[in-house]
View: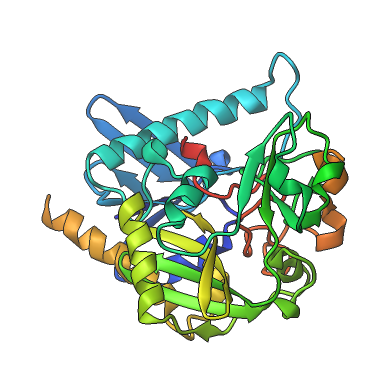
Length: 308
Length: 46
């Protein structure tokens, strides 16, 4: 049985579960603890879905697929803590440790733990060996000289909320106007071209693209929130496929979603998201993306079962 | 300018989270970045 650690609001989980028919699946929504009971002990574990009465144990679990065990309902945590935050932290830590143990036992599928994470800095350093990379700076306290000219966009390393109702998307900024008391991540703006996103699934790729003129501003997500639509599938050249494989082999990731800009026939690297959203690219599975991911999970699950 | 001066208002990009999940309002729709505490990767397991 495949254990999926996620939350109740992850639509990608909704979609992939529908394509994992060959395998028995247990979905654990960390944000709905009232729906579950669990007991981990010296001789194993049992987790029960109190709604469906389905259970998974150390004897029936064959694979662990990590999606999005997180909470959409944010809470204000007082200086000295509160019960709800305590409950969340204790639960998070248990299931994080469970994931690490499953990884150590070779039971995870596609997504790995963050022990050797490639964050934005490391991604940029690796990417230059495989793709075009626009100049970038992570800086604080003083303005790098290169930023005194040209056009630059601000980006972020994390998705940490800034305040109520505030989110920092990619957008063009004037570097000289920035408050240097804060840490910044700026990259030279790339004009024109098309945005290309590539889902890498254990050696296979699925690419889709959209002209940058089709969305407002520098961040395509903003437009997608307003006007949700899939991007049309596109082809990658042999050289692009080769570069993507090289990047994934060097970082050790087996799954991820790349964002690029393709301009004048070359791919400019933006980022790799090692466990992001991908089902929106083919939500009806018309092009087989959902099947591609589901089959990769089931392939690994069959391998885990054969090793029992 | 501070980060909050540059940030977009969530109202500008549509509602997120809560209630029935659908593709138009679900913050998990496509983002690799964050709205309403959306993780861009498996950071829960850091």
